Amino acid sequence: MTVDLTAHLTATTTTPATAPTTSAGPRPPSRGTEVGNPTDLHHPSRHKALPAVAPYRSLRPRPVRWWSLVFVAAWLALWWLATEQRWVAPLFLPPPEAVLKAFGQAVRGDQGGDPLWVHAQWSSLRVFGAFILAVLTAVPVGIAMGVNRWAQALLDPLLEFYRPLPPLAYLPLIVIWLGIDEASKWLLIYLACFAPIALAARSGTHNATAEQINALRSLGATHWQMLRYVIIPAALPDILVGLRIAMGFAWTTLVAAEMVAATQGLGQMVLNASNFLRTDIVVMGIFVIGTIALVLDALLRRLEQWLLPWHGR
Image (cartoon, rainbow, N blue to C red):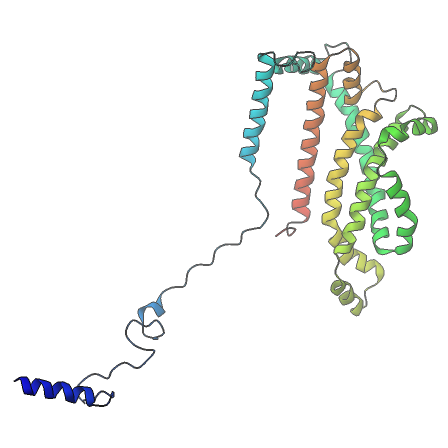
């Protein structure tokens, strides 16, 4: 038995590596199709359903509105705590209840002047009037500066010169020119709004690519058609951003504009209260101006989403 086993092992090790095939036995799997290899067309893993494609997600950060409300509530709580614990004197930081009381008195007109809605009406009229005039003039000027080098050479130095100047710097000159009527107030707010809108429109004209312009030229488009179908739509996102910035500048300049012999207006109400150290009315006026500005900025955001649903996607 031992001799036979040794002979059998010797014969096995000396035989070629090719395994004998029998007609009755199954054919051994070839390389690349062995059992468990995913490259086999009949392997179960080849018939699994493909994973679903993840939906498109914008790369822009989503606004965390709930956290914003939490932080606003935290700031209000800190304000109440600072005034309740007398960390700050009421002359410098009035408590929230004093500001609410001043707001109620201003709404009813119990402070010896016009009601709050009259002041808000006059301020809104000045801001909106000057803002609309700035939009109607600054957008064409900015587009002209962006598409015409002669217009840029003529208007850009003047625009860049007066843009950094604070409104109070040229306010005395405006008063000398136009007096103390409404025209001087409108002009001051208009100049504050004109520069950001014109610069935004000029910058937006560069969003039109050369391929778009050359495509319209090859189709025989005129200069006005290129402005209408390519340049103005490309510049519209920047123009809307410029409108939002200009609206903030308008409300910032409002107080300076209403320093000139104004009897109604939110800025005049704040300045008049500061002369009598009524910090509660000053803080209340600041909150009213800020709230109106926030509402207008939200409306401009909605306008941007309505006009440019594709922007940023």
